[in-house]
Image (cartoon, rainbow, N blue to C red):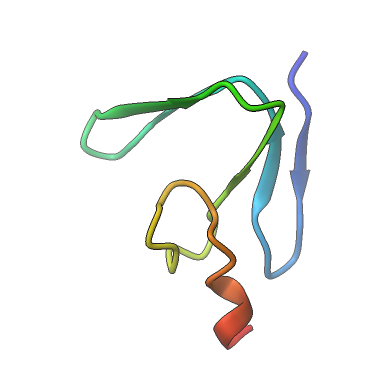
Length: 57
C-alpha cells in the first residue's frame, strides 16, 4: 500500500520508490524512500518539488 500526504500550498509526499507518467507519456522514476511531487507547477525539476512554491505562497 502506498501512502500519499497532501500539504496545503506545498508538495504531495509519496512513499517511494515511484514512477510518474507525465502528460506527454514520459515516465520518470525515483527509488528514494520518500519523494515530494510538485503540485503548483513552479518547480524547475517538475514533477519533483524544488520548493519553488515557497517563493510565492
